[in-house]
Image 1 (cartoon, rainbow, N blue to C red):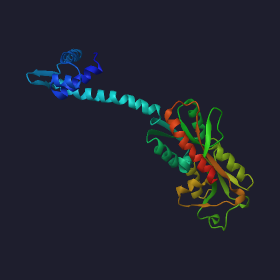
Image 2 (image 1 turned 180 degrees about the horizontal axis):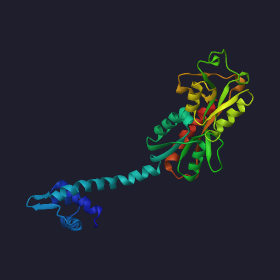
Image 3 (image 1 turned 30 degrees about the vertical axis):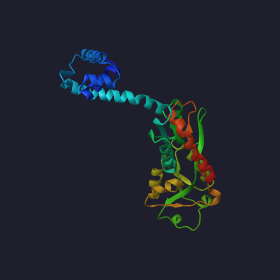
Image 4 (image 1 turned 45 degrees about the vertical axis):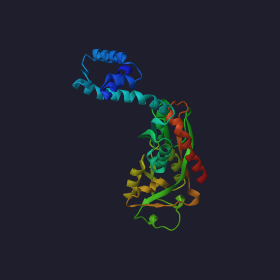
Length: 299
């Protein structure tokens, strides 16, 4: 079944005008070629589209049904070039964004706001992954942009977009919750709830180095902050938590400041593959990396 867009446009125009002469005039052509177009279309479809009368034409039942589809086809055809141009310019399309659980609390909202401000028609597909999983998918093209913890492997680029310090989460009923002043890790003797090296390698490394100088008995290891806070709430120990995660406000958990000697700032990076050919990434990347300028200015 072969028919052309020219035939579809002729058919829709005749259907609108209900008259071959007026339709031909609208299309800036003579009536005979338009008549031949419609006849050819009817042969291709093997249906009669119009009933001819002395004062014009009317649509058959098949013609009425085909008119709806013809309008949709022409609308899509008319929109297709502009859609392709918008995708090529990065104004629309899809951006696949990865983030860690902690990264969601720290910066996901601000990142989404930047993207939507400068590319409101770009669809953002969100995927929650550990940093190492994001690296793999950035390298193989499954992700376009990631919010990750360093270090970044070869083949990828990144910029710091956020920095925050750590606080100590303690059970609310413990004396530590009411102790005066910031807490020094070296003076504590509580059980420590640490980060899994497989699930949160960066935070495991930073926090293990911090608590290595203290007399902690590491009794629990977890890969996600909500699990750690649940363990703290149940009185199983203390945990070092990025400040942004205090927004979780878990009943039974109190967050305490650390002494200056124990303060550590942990960065969050936006990471991407420079070989990416996604125009949406090219469009939003300058605006996302501006978050890095703000992070450095505030650190």
